[in-house]
Image: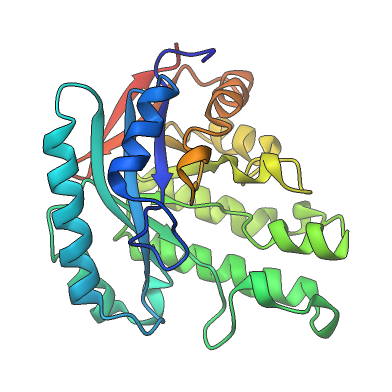
Length: 268
């Protein structure tokens, strides 16, 4: 590893509907790769059909047991990725308050009443209208102020670029993106640098370096870095490259959350 403080703050175990490996296996992979910490943040999509009480209890109990097993070897943070929380806020708050989580990742994977951006046939939609509504929802999520870090801000580009080959000019959305950034900064919340896109056709973190630099120059200092791994083999994938980008943008520290309180760690 290029850096000694490798901390993966966005990962999925087999408690996620699309996860594949156990919490224990994720931790073993982290240690093999020389990482010092991991946040296990399984999917909790509020507009899904899962029994959230069963999910939350099982996932929290499992991460608690693994956390105790690896105590002193790595840092394990317990969390969830709360998807579409603004669509059913009462239900979302019940989940948030159900356990003593370290980190709640906030994300939007689909517009209300629609499929995940992954499944959309973009030939049937106006991409500008989709992205405008998406960023409006991201702003509402930031203003809701119930999550700790805002995940993969440019999530739809994963699939718009990969399947359509469309080069999206994000400058037309700068006003609303700036509003999102200002909201995060004002509320002492973090922006996530999601490294998954580095290994896709988009060949970029989510968001990319231009928006990360924009966030930094606006005064954004809280910033998490996560692989969004759904497989043990991909734990820590891209974290070193993410740190490189942070340094290029002027950052000397990255953020982790413990008991939902942000702590800064040096990039070294």
